Image 1 (cartoon, rainbow, N blue to C red):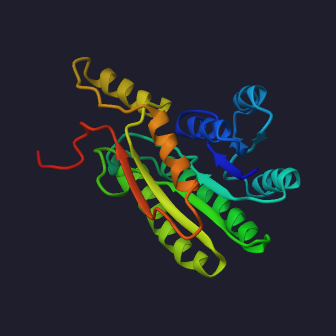
Image 2 (cartoon, helix red, strand yellow; image 1 turned 45 degrees about the horizontal axis):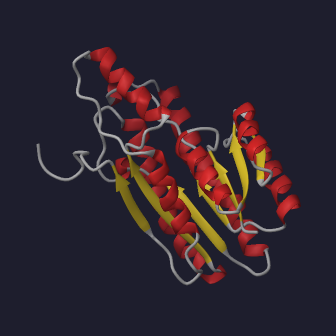
Image 3 (cartoon, rainbow, N blue to C red; image 1 turned 135 degrees about the vertical axis):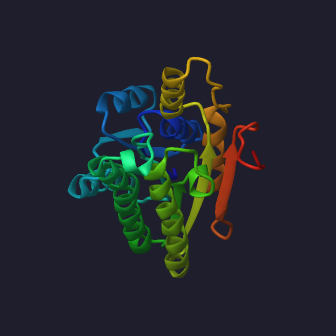
Length: 244
C-alpha cells in the first residue's frame, strides 16, 4: 500500500485530496491543527492516520512523521498544502505580525514538511518519493490586496525548483500545483469579505475542489521517471489571462 502525508488535511483542498487518495487505497497521514476534523476522516477509513499538529512546530512535526513511519515503514509522497491567506490589505495597512504569521505557516511550515519528507525519502530503501507543493495562481498573477499571501507563494515556487534539483540524485521528484478558486473555506471567506465591502460585488467564479484533488492524485501516481513540474488548474472564467 502506497503512503502519503497531507498537510492542511482538515478542510478544503487538503481534505478533498486526502479523501481522493483514501478512495484509491493509499495509506494517508492527516496533518492539521484541528484534530476533531481529522478524527472524522479517520472514522470513515482505517487507512487514514490522524496526526494533529501545527505545521510550524518543528518538533511536533518530527513526532508526527515518526508516528506515521512507524505504522507504514515508508513515505511515497507528501502533499505540502497547509497555508494561510492573511489580511486583505495594501502593504501600508499590513501589521508586521500578520505578515510574519503568513510566512510562518506558508513558508516555514512548508519548509519543515518538505525537509522531513526529503530526509525520509533519501534514507529509505528503495530510495525516492515525490513532494507536491500547493502553490497558487498568486505565484504568477496576484489578486489585489494580497501582499502577504503572494509573497509567500513566490517563495514556494523557489522551493519547488530547489527541491526538484536537489532531489534528482536521490530519485525524489518535486512538482507544484497552482490552483485558482476551488470552492474552499478560504475562497468562501474572500467572497464574504467582498460582499461585506460591497453587497453588489461580483463574486469570484469557482471550480469544485474535487477536481483539484484528482489532479494531485494524478501527479502522485505517475511512474518515477515522469513528473509534473508545474500544473495550473483554475475556474474557467477566472480573469487570469487577458487585459482589463
